[in-house]
Image 1 (cartoon, chains in turn brown, cyan):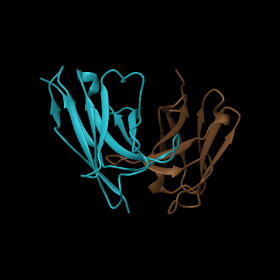
Image 2 (cartoon, each protein chain N blue to C red):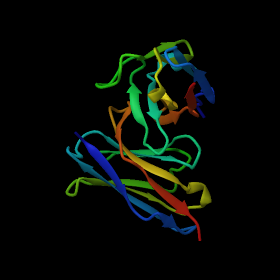
Image 3 (cartoon, rainbow over the protein chains, first blue to last red):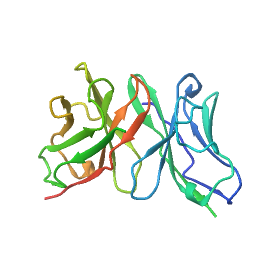
Image 4 (tube, rainbow over the protein chains, first blue to last red):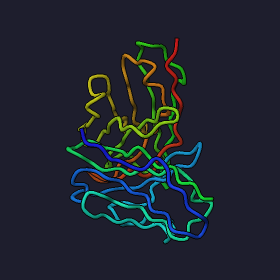
Length: 106
Length: 118
């Protein structure tokens, strides 16, 4: 079955740039989506179709897709960005989520 | 804007059927892909499946034999039934609106914890 691989954790200092990767076979040929989930809350869409930001999502959130890896980049990371982040893609009509990355801002 | 709210029993006995309902407010349940996604405690997200308003369904192959998702347009609700549950089915269950045939999920409900235990 298709798998998406994310690093379990990423740490960043406030104001710096955080990059969270998601890797999968031929992921570059697919659309990827990113969700933010804070403790006790439901997931929230932050990037869709690799690079698009939903209305209301700050410009510091951006996405890219190259080869077998998609990347969520948070520029000027703020304390409020501390959360779990999940990538998602489709493979043969099945939804696949990455295992999630815990972003720590310290 | 569209809001989703899950409801149903928080405790289900092993081997029984888990049943949840998602009520959609602020928009019609026609069109879109109405989906269920779950998250075991402390773990990642697991897609269960969706119902498309035309009547078609698509389920996670790992759950397909036990899952039914249906829609009640008169009540603007859609439902999940998961049969023969075990402790491994203990999770927070989310309903979500799927955009496009192979798109993203937005918005999501707040989630409801279902525990499988005798």
